[in-house]
Amino acid sequence: MPNELAPRNGVDEPTSWSAAETMVHYSVAAPSEADARSVASAMARRGHRWVTVRPVHLPYLDPGNGLFGKPEFSRPELEGRWSADSLVDEEVPGPASEFHQHGCEQAAVEALGRAHGGFWDGGSLADRETMLSGFDHRGPAHELDQEHAHRIRRDVLSGFPPPTEEPAPAAPLRCSTVERPLPPVLECVRQVARDQESRQGDLPDGTA
Image (cartoon, rainbow, N blue to C red; front, side, top):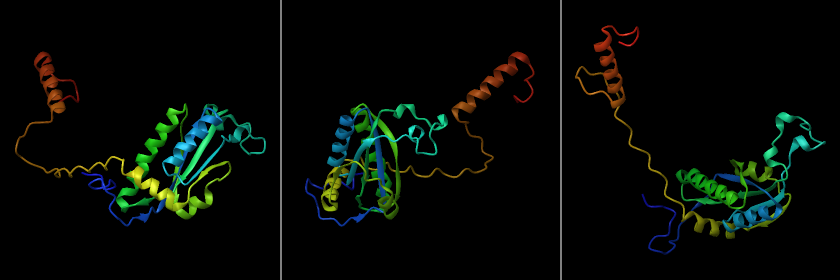
């Protein structure tokens, strides 16, 4: 199946895409501020509209937080790390493409984190209004206007692999009196049972 996002014949054809119904927050934990800023710049080059960089906030180390000093909420792997967070606002050619785009972008962001000594630290997906009101803009590193971000995202999306086609549904199971060979694993089990019976005469309870 060809990638519906890719330019045809090497030329961008005029298309009308609508904004995605959801927006996605991506987060990468990097070992230093410099690494986090490198990740943030790479995110901006991928068309992430808002990108921030700041030290990872750990509630169990914050005296002003209700979780302070509670070891069950500790995350030692994040201590001393810096966070690069972003919000992606993009278009989709159709509803079926939306989650495929999110999955491809997450894989790309995970690779960015690893390339800079960090790792994927989760993210979230929500409707536009919820995400815009809830995104933490502290520590701004990059901000793109919508038109510029959409132009970059279209170019990025054209490089994504096409969605995997769903396999055709299997024929429904039906009762039949016609003998037919068993699947290989079941046939092996039955052969072992036959061998036991031929050697021992009687099979253990339940084997038959």
